[in-house]
Image (cartoon, rainbow, N blue to C red; front, side, top):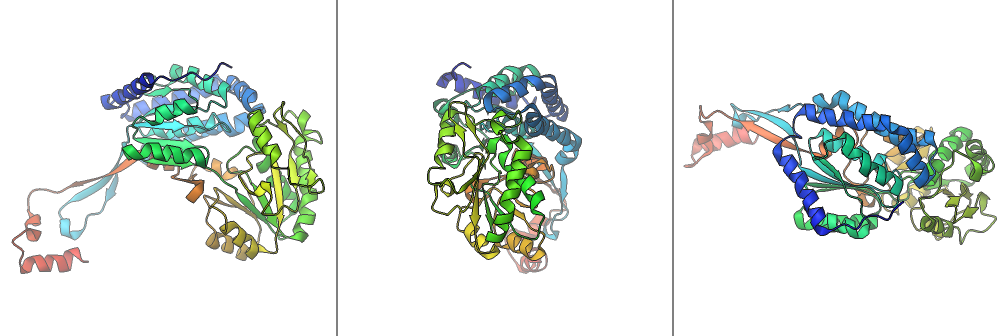
Length: 470
């Protein structure tokens, strides 16, 4: 792939202004236009499914089935769900009016924000650039997309194909590195949607501040998993192994580490080893179903997290090849809080097992850390489920299932605290990319407003007491 183009300030400014002109023209507002764009987006994915799968294979070593499941098919499902419900979602909602304003009527109207910026990451480079776009187009916005330069094959395909399908006046793509992204962020937008890490998110917020631009931040963090003895550990291991090692662990809501007791750990670890081998064989490096790390730098970073783990602690895997961007599915037992593995989000195929006394100790540990994007618990104990629901805070909470909550169209996706702010997916994308505008109407006659206008008198006091205060 060629190097990421160097962006000129004038080009960036002109691109944004063209999007603004398109929005001001009113062409993005009709429902028919929005539906047409979403259908065209779905058609692009249908007609170039194999091309996108090849690009994902080149960037991340993704198996074709995994690309269809987590990227191409995921976006198509989002589009189809949006098309099914969009008219209902956008329908103005009646709002009741207080007695003090009668006769009057009120309603809530969804209006598009204007021109939005979508900055995508590299780990799901197709899904995480197009899924927010679904919401932006459904709401009648124009959009500037900035795909990740770390996944250049996907970025190039998005840049080339998107203008051939959707309205090229309303959607534009700029490929950029960090310097170019800073130039883009210097422009004024009506909303910025960023998916990535907390360090860059702070820069996004800082860039948005001078314009008071609202932002949605979809970040990450260390998503913990609690496992107790009330569940079938074989099934737990199968679900955990799938969720952790999908996309070679490069998933923002992947289980980052497991908290469990000594007794459960002794039985869970053999099941995890069997589950991993069932997924990727005893030689994952040769498995057509196991992906690769995005680049050599990230491979080195992940491998370095094992530096202070002893050979006895690595109960599965541990092999890596920097040149091939390969790290084996790895399980590390008896991990302690002071080890490198626990100092940052792993974002790779390393699964630490942290042995802990009980659920209360696990909750204390979870609450001592920044709020995670997801918290998972494998337990059938109702009291433990209630405890986890009421005593922890996370972007999402999953019982006996990890990762898959993203595919539930009626659930919002988003973080809390350091794991992000704002939410999207399905109806929640409409809320994110629209302004819910109150509209009120009151006839000029009868002129009841004179009852609360000067000169104030006893009637004013009665109106306040019986109509305003109640």
